Amino acid sequence: MSVAAYSVPDRVVIRDVGPRDGLQGESPVVPRERARLVLALAEAGVRRVEAVSLVSPKAVPSMAGAEEVLAEIGRPPGLTITALVPNLKGAQLALGAGVDEITVTVAVSPTYNERNVRMTIDESVSAIGAICELAASERVPVDAVVSCAFGSPYEGDVASEEVRDLVRRLKDAGAEAITLADTTGMATPRILADVLAAVGTDVGLHMHETRGTGLLNCFRAMEIGVSRFDTSVGGLGGSPFAEGSAGNVSTEDLVALLDDLGVETGIDLGRLLSASALAERLVGHSLPSRVAYAGARLGRR
Amino acid sequence: MSVAAYSVPDRVVIRDVGPRDGLQGESPVVPRERARLVLALAEAGVRRVEAVSLVSPKAVPSMAGAEEVLAEIGRPPGLTITALVPNLKGAQLALGAGVDEITVTVAVSPTYNERNVRMTIDESVSAIGAICELAASERVPVDAVVSCAFGSPYEGDVASEEVRDLVRRLKDAGAEAITLADTTGMATPRILADVLAAVGTDVGLHMHETRGTGLLNCFRAMEIGVSRFDTSVGGLGGSPFAEGSAGNVSTEDLVALLDDLGVETGIDLGRLLSASALAERLVGHSLPSRVAYAGARLGRR
Image (tube, rainbow over all chains, first blue to last red; front, side, top):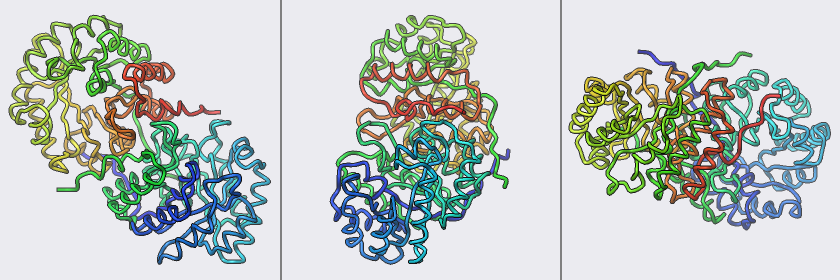
């Protein structure tokens, strides 16, 4: 009998956001150790890492010392270093430290945006425009990450036209790349298909395992034609306070799947598991990644 | 733009194996409470439950008191009660207690079968034949569950022809239904497609989240045409000793996904979450289900 075929890209680009998005919600880890984690990821073959956030140390103590982290990392060959910036001042600091890429965020959910960054969506888009202008003057690309792109914890489903319109405004504001984030794990294959039909497949995806659908959504997105994914080593970024909770899709869970499907990532799973073990030691508790616990499946006979 | 469409069945049948497969690895829960869990699942709309195992209480203390469990459950309307039996004596006890369905297991992995039931595969098939003969005399169907159908922790990949051949032998031995189990979470969409191409889609699937791919594999299987799934309330059946470990796909994680996709299960997610909370209280530790922790996603606007 024949079975429905699936079709995935030959290769995908993985950006590990663990050192920034993952560690942000943890007790502070010293800059030297955060740099060590970035370097361990680079040694595993990860070519893009969101390494720091240029936020106020008072507002986010866990992200203090971004410039020290960047100085410790240095310039490993082939590694694209990304910094999240919340405003123009952060962008100036990031550009001064020589980052390769800047990420900015805005939520398609008005309530989430207000609560997360205390700005209206219009104010966020305007601030992003100023950041893009500054970054362009130094030829550094800006990736605008759209939060709550597949649903809002406040407003529920989000119309795909709203996501499309916000993406257009962000491109008009100067964003070179767009990433759609499933901030609270509300995406499903139905919603994913709707949003990608409206926005197109030239986007990165940042999916969450909050409801266990992260890997499924990554797989479906690959079938639709997406080939850029944000993931987090160890699944760093779930709440450390609740056993069983989960946030970011774990890098090793996605890499283990892609290895089996023959999708190239350039990442060595064994070395990645070493980086994951380091991440676990740095935060001092176990991480939600399944493959970090179970190990890779036995290979083909 | 158009996106690749997906196709899932209008409805699927879920058999909850939590009260048996899930509780088997836990500290013993008294029969009255195990029956309570089965009844809570029935109240949530679960129509098939693997409720007990008729094994030696010395070998598996957590499964002692199967007949008490069955007596406590009684005969709720619309509920199909399944018992796992390891041998002819267990089948006699199960039939005497009036179960609606019998499950038996055999692994396609010779090493796993030896270690799990201390029999060769030939010996297991022969024992299953005797159980099927006895069950047929009482018109009770036998579902043969094939362990390690998507890979063995000992031998690695399993040739799909081996699975097909074992399935044929089990049908010849009198099994009315076949379930393929991903015992240690080694299935991927690639392997799933291979095995279903060899065996056909008239099978149940019992997938695991050991490597985080359980929901993905269930979704892919639905696309290929499978419509019967074994899941476990709360994801009961992961090792309780290791945070982050996971076993059975959790019933509520699958139901939440199917609700969004418009696939009917007959199960009410809210009541199912109550049954899951009960399961968590009975075992005294948190369970790996993501939806049990995060709750259902907010509905459509």
